[in-house]
Amino acid sequence: MAEYYYQRPSDLKLLVVVGGPGGSGSSTISKYLAKKWGLHRVDAGEIMRSKTQKKELEAYLDNQVTQHPEIDKNIDQFLVRMSYYPNMLIEGKFFAAIATLVGIPCTVKIWITASLEVRVKRIMLREGFIKPEEKISKTNEIYIKEEKELLKRQESDISRAQNLYHADLSKPELFNDIVLDTTSLDVGRSIKKIMEEIANNDKLTERFTPEQLKF
Image (tube, rainbow, N blue to C red):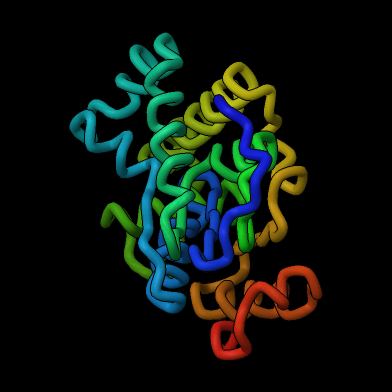
């Protein structure tokens, strides 16, 4: 992938990057930030999912993406091109690392994480397996299945990032300005925390208007 030594022109305004493992809340947060800041959102996960049926996604990742690195590279090259359009939010697990390694200047790079247990429960809630506030045992068959799938996908993501870009996704602080653990946070408090993190960082604050940081 080509290196980008020139600065992103200021008239292109914001370039925000959001990433995180499944169930962390990264998609919900990226949608909120895109709406708040008036950004065009591009989601690497949606691009990947568009290539296959949901129930076949795991097999596609195992049998196609893992064995054919050009699939990841083609998506990543598309995201790099999109990063030089004005007012963009790029959501993807690899993009903060790519931007750091090849020198794409970003307004802010944010990594969202949460405990494995919380991530599993969020996915079960999203898929309708449990109701809000319902307790679920870790011995529940659906819980065990979702946990295994999350761990498998996480291992695959880490392996692919290492093989493609020599980037260690297990250390998101190497590539991101903000690493936010949402284990005990709802969406509102997560957004508030992000605004506080930006406001407390002089380099990040100067890239935003005061209005953009209001919550």
